[in-house]
Image (cartoon, rainbow, N blue to C red; front, side, top):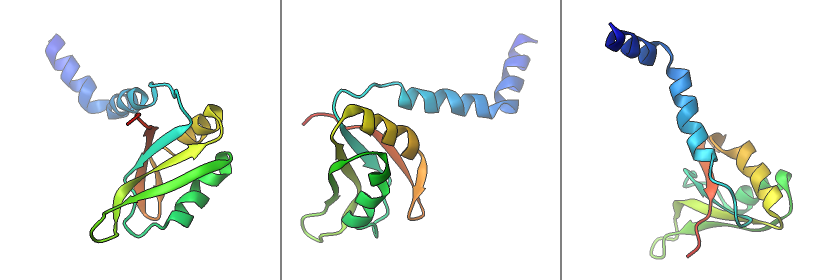
Length: 112
């Protein structure tokens, strides 16, 4: 009986399960004002990328990583702000949002 109620809860409350996973993604704290953005459209330009993240603070650098051979976007990029607070605000506002038709995900950038 207890097993059946657990299965019922999992299948009837998917939003709580999704919320748990999305909160795990946002739990890591920023230690630098640099963000890693994945899920970018191949058609997004560097200028459009910078404009999308400009409302949250002063963007020092916004760069889409490109393939060396073809020059096409690899689907991810980095944004650097002047402060950690600005980067955190951008992360909260832009994570799991749509940019040029694609869902993007914003995470702290890991050091090289």
